[in-house]
Length: 355
Image (cartoon, rainbow, N blue to C red; front, side):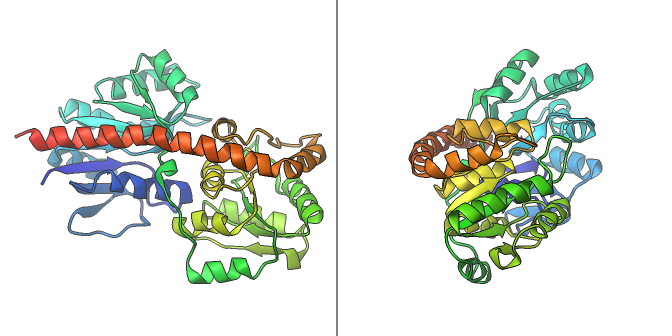
């Protein structure tokens, strides 16, 4: 049986990335996989899956002993203030290229870039890939500027079919009065709405609906701190805050039990659409704005937005229409994501036919 090396931002407790890991492995079920990852992956080693501690040396050894390489789905090829994370993730494609191993990149976000060096390295690393699929239109435009040939797909989380969360989490959420609003905070950045501002928005929605709030962190540590600060400014009897670590299946499943969503992170926006509930995004980064608009969540509240109260009222009054539109657009995104699944099937088929 052939073996592939899978490399991405996995094993660090990020709910969105662990959900993507699950999808990536489902697309590679017919081969053995070396998962080169961080210390806490959401999957266990098995006969067909080896867990390899994340390091450049281990990555090199794995690729050299594999039949091919996959740069796994996620936001790996971009930079904000520091480009080191991108350089690190490009190691896999570079090693594969110079080891003459077939490789591909799936469900990628490409860009934005700030440095010419980063653009050059991304181009050199990926120019020999068998195929590259990107998860949004902006990534395809950025890739075109680099001279890379890509196929427009979608975030691979659209291939998920989330079920209800574990019994314990479900019981806790169902103990809260309806309508339930689910809030997924993001680690504080310069362009992120502050916990205090988020608490004002959330408090208004609770007041207008008479409902309750579920706070769920998608990334351990700073998301918990953000959620704790927001919670402290809201009526305690109206708030349930889950604490890290949260299994990705519990996180995505929690949206099935809620009526409205105020997502800050990209995969909490996608989880809202999969649960077919209206969402009022408060984006922390451009990628969140992009995916929100693509799936019909067009009303968003930005940092210190002066019209936030009006947007809350508009959101609640049009929520049913939002659901209907999002259901259709999410179905389209799922079809786009299946493009990656087909290309992976062909990629593995080519490996199997190789002596």
